[in-house]
Length: 249
Ligand SMILES: [Cu+2]
Image (cartoon, rainbow, N blue to C red; front, side):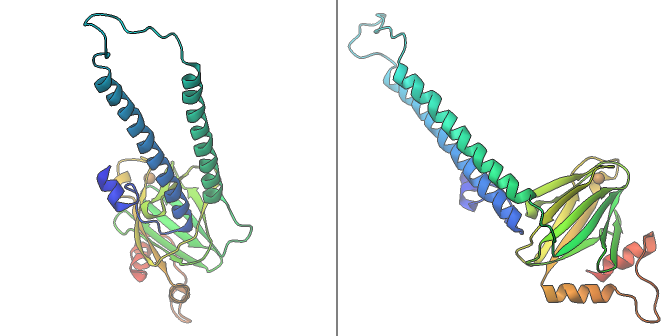
C-alpha cells in the first residue's frame, strides 16, 4: 500500500487516454476511501481491545454494565456506509458514462478484428489495413488528440482488446457489435494483449499501439498507399503481415 501511495496511482499505469484518466480518477477515490475505512475499523478494534482489556473500576471476574442497544450509534453506523456507497455508486456511474461515451462522428474509425492468433486493424476511410500474427505482432497507429472509435470484431472465438496504458479493456464477441472510443493524450508506444483465453496460443496474441502526432499519422497513412506502379494496397496473408508490421515499426 505504501508503494502504491508513493506512485500516486495505486498500481495503475500512467494513463495514455482521456478515458484512462477518468478510470484512474475513480480508482484513486475508491482506493483511498477503502484505505480510510479499513484504517478506521482496524483502529477502533485495536482501541477497544487495548482500552477495555480490563474494565476500569471492576474487580476481576465481575461483569460491567450490560448495554442492550445504543440507537444513535447504530443509526450512525448504518447511515455513514449508506452515504459512502451511494457517493461511490454515483462516481462510478459518472466514470462509466464518460468512458463508454461514443461521439456521433468520431475523428477516426478503426475496425479491430481479433483472430486466432493475431490482430487486423482496418482504417476504412484511409484504405489502410495492418495485419499481424503471433510471429509478427501488428502495430495500431493512432493520432494523439483525436476521438478514435475502435469497432471490435471477433473472427472466430471471444477475444479481448486490452491496452494496459488505456486502463480500459473490452471483449470482441462473435456476432456482437462492440466498440470503444479512445482519445489518446500522449505520444508513445504501448503494449497490447488479448485478455480473454482463446486457445493454446492466446499468450502470443500481442500487439502494439503507437500514438503519434497528427502529422506523423498523415505520413503513416501516405506510406501505406500503393505506389503508382507498385503492388496494390495491403491485403491479408502471412507475407503481407510481416511487411505491414515492419512498415510501422
Ligand atoms: Cu485471444
